[in-house]
Amino acid sequence: MARFDKTFQRSAERVRYKARLRSSGKPRLSVFRSERHIYAQIIDDSCGKTLCSASTLDKAFKGGKTANCEVAVKVGELIAAKAKEAGIKEVVFDRGGYNYHGRVKNLADGARGGGLLF
Image 1 (cartoon, rainbow, N blue to C red):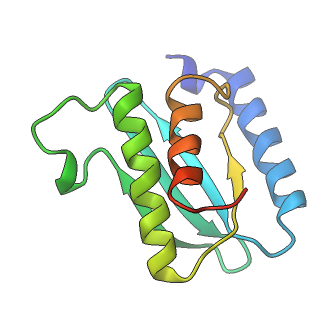
Image 2: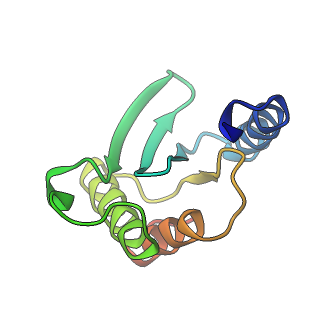
C-alpha cells in the first residue's frame, strides 16, 4: 500500500513539520484519506489534543457513498461547523503527504466555505 511507503512517510512528516512552523499557536487541520473514507481532525499541537473531528463515519453520512469529492466537501463543512462550536476560527492546513488535489482539495474548500480561515 502506498500510505506505508517510506517516501510517503517522509513527505507526510515534512508537510507536518512545515505546518507546525507556520502555526504560531494556531491549531492544525489534519487530513487522512483511505480508499473508502476521509477523516479530518483539528489538533492543538501545544498540548497534543484533538479539539474536534469529522469523518465519513459520522451519523450524517450513513447509507450513502463515502469516497467521492462531494462527500469530502460535506466533511469539510462539518469540521468547520464543529470548529465554530469550539471557538476556532483560524487553522493551519496539514494535507498529510497527500497531493492537494481531489478529495483533499474539496475537503479544504468545504472547510473554507464553512468559515475556517487558512
